[in-house]
Length: 323
Image 1 (cartoon, one colour):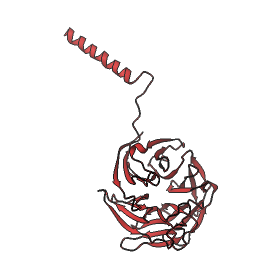
Image 2: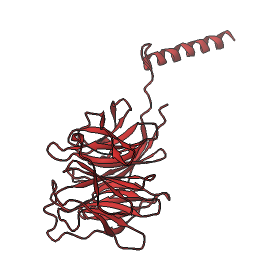
Image 3: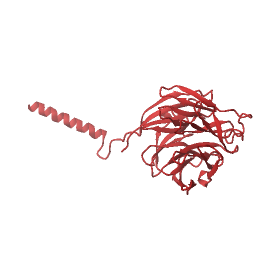
């Protein structure tokens, strides 16, 4: 018995010593990473222009995306297959006059409760640039014309007011259009939306009584209150230092945000106080991430490979509970 007790005591001392080495007295165990189960589920055809720009999640587990370079709206199934739903008409001049980019591209996309898909299209021509609607079983139709000298980019839906909000990255404007379509109204032209050399107002989301907009050039996330009568309130810059910010999504935990940083090849987690941490990078397979969306704790990240020119893809990850 005395030998057994001595062995147990020795084992306990060794275990305590090992823990002391692993976790010094002034240290705490590392917190779990915000994202786990990171994997690439879909690879797209770069040569065919399948550079995914934006994503809308459907209730049945599918996702609709815009392929910028091929002017397409496509659908991705949970099984990983990709089906092209529509190809928007090519401009007569090939889109060489599309502002800032020089090629026609489909950009923002949202899904309406009735099953209709809305997407933005920039061509540099007056006959095609604008908001398009795709209804199951019908050809896509432009329902709102936008200035040809602009670049419509981000698209957000307020399901309560049935208003769509459209960002213009070149003109530094947020337009508003009813779901039924019609003539756009300039909702905000605040300085916080302006470009400073390339692209300004970019991603857009309606959240907690406001329209939130990212500004790629300024590296900012801006909150614009939606006032009575659909008037724009005074913009508030909620986060800075986000060079190359493109699209973003709220995690469901208050004002916490996941955002894609295109050229830096990062996805960052932005806290309500404006601080941010990198949660994904090139080591995870990022290739110019353009868009992020959440279904529960499942995170979808689109990678367009605009400048990496290697592997446009869809990456999935799981958001961990940090509480």
